[in-house]
Image (tube, rainbow, N blue to C red; front, side, top):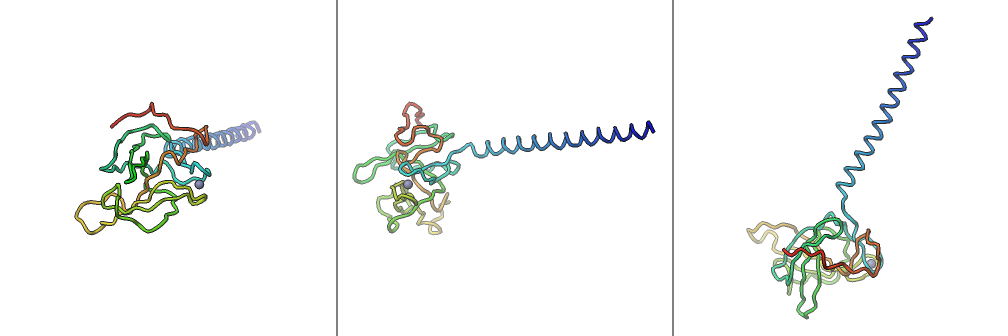
Length: 185
Ligand SMILES: [Zn+2]
């Protein structure tokens, strides 16, 4: 009788341990999952400054340098080091531009080859898919398969820094990016 009770008691302890272990594992798993997520997504959504629609993810920002850039600098933006290029159009208007592999662009007009900041790439105006604000340009490689040079990407986008905003920015919509974080290349 005593043994029977003891065995039942032991069984209960084992069951409780199992529950605790299972519960603990679940917590650890959840914590680990959050850690991986935060490491993977140490990025921000980039928003249209005019309407707040998300138009890109800083995860896809990359460095694609224009040989005609007036200035190139590394800046701490959107949780990472971002290359910002100052590009000037034929009318003398200058833009601080960041380049991204992916963006939600509503492309306007036909692709233009003339006056491209990126040789071998044609350009189109990129506008916000929601409000139509000018966000930047979409560049498409037109020399794909016609040269022996290795091609990095087929299409990418140049976004005008002053026309977008990071989702974590607290000063929407009048915030201006500080310039004292510049680290020149
Ligand atoms: Zn918009």
